[in-house]
Amino acid sequence: MNVLKRSFYCMTLLSFAYFNIQCKGEKKGDNTSEEMPQSKKMVTISKAAFGVTADSVQVDSYTLKNQQGMEVQIITYGGIITSLKVPNKAGVIEDVVLGYPTLAQYEKSSPYFGALVGRYGNRIAKGKFSLDGTEYTLATNNGPNHLHGGEKGFDKVVWSAEVLDDEGALKLSYLSKDMEEGYPGNLKTIVTYTLTEDNALEVFYESTTDKKTIVNLTQHSYFNLSGDFSKTILDHEIMINADAFIPVDKTLIPTGELKEVANTPFDFRTAKPIGQDIDVENDQLKNGLGYDHCWVLNNQNQGIRLTATAFDKASGRFMEVFSDEPGIQLYTGNFLDGTLPSKQGGTYAYRTGFCLETQHYPDSPNQKEFPSVVLNPGETYKTKTSFKFSTK
Image: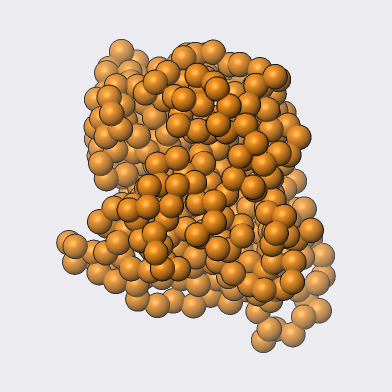
């Protein structure tokens, strides 16, 4: 591990420890839990059968619920968040993530609704990358490029699950075997979803490998904070703590440039509606059919920090995204076309959900100036993102 990478890694671990103290003080840092009756759990976790895959594998659903009424449902297929319920400003609890009610629908056709994405989130140019002079070839499942781990990425496998009752957490694990989807190394991945009492959903990723490889994991939930999936997300106000973004070519592969957001439609440093500039005449917006770009987050040497926010004025729901990642992809549902069934009835129309995917930059294995996504044997890939909900 080179000096720069080691420094960044160490600072991330320090920030991660600080973040845990701040966010979980009620469990480890003070006496609150000791004063509570032992019979009263802050977060309850229940399990139910969700279905059986086409190749006869059982899929279970786990529901985590806190005392504030926030509730998240996660299935072992793809580690998918199928439902995330939070209160609006009037206290009405509604689901704010797009998804399906049945496993068969996820298997048939899903634009990564709520899924864990890996081994590599986002795109790799022409499905090729090299490590130590060896070229690896991946599936080209997005035009000429590789997207989100390939034909059967982490979003389409069944994860093993373990309930961490005392922590209000669900631990999912998966072993991706050497050369699965073309990636080298036996990669063991653990993703822990934790629901806190202050209405945050934390996602902690860990991976180890026995051979040099690349890793870039993310969570791909589509949010609509209105709770009404028939409405577009264009009036949601977004803030992204980034002074630059990554321009892409017509196949959505980075050009290699990091461009300042100032005086462009990509300036979200101050919160503004998604729809304010989305139809402005701009080559980058044409390439993405709207926003489908990665932002270069500020303060990358500070580890976990506030990276983005989203606010729906009508419902009053406010979401904050904390992460230690260097980038975040804003995707505005540009490929939702009214053909996918909604769990609320009808279909998911154009731009009725948005994603904020914390991650390393697209095509990093082929872009030497981008932060490294290489994982070596003996190292542990660790990253954490938290989605915190409130009202205002």
